Length: 113
Length: 117
Image (tube, rainbow over the protein chains, first blue to last red):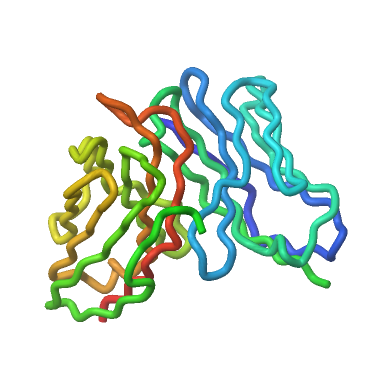
């Protein structure tokens, strides 16, 4: 079945550091890929998405590129801020079936001033 | 504000109580979902409704009973829960289309924190 694997956390960075959060997936066909973010005490918010190979999703300075050859969708940001402290979830959905959204375990990011 | 509103935000209930979680979406979507988020576990899809019809029940115990009276409202009725059911319950919605939810973005509410004592 489909699955999403995220790197183990938590991750602690200083402000303005470079961020990479790894995500790899297993799925048949051409799934859509997502990053969701959950700020403390809140629900999940869509951060960015990519629906086909080589697409780059971007939002709020975050980027992720859909790499089919490596089945990866790593999240990057060039300069993190304290306000980026949150839990980040990588997820996939098979083509045309968003109800089958499969999430990774999530990783907690803490950014120090 | 995501357009998906959940109430209550926090609920403490005994194992013999009956309570309900409510979700309302203001996005004009036709598909609604319940997810469960437990500590240190991936989010688990519980139920999917598309145009008020249940299209997925992910082997959820019968002590959880969903209800979808219309495309904008979704309830989760809770009865004789166990302490291990304590979790964050997230409601979500997406555009959907006749037949099955389509590949559109899912929007989540802020969740209802449930504690079973």
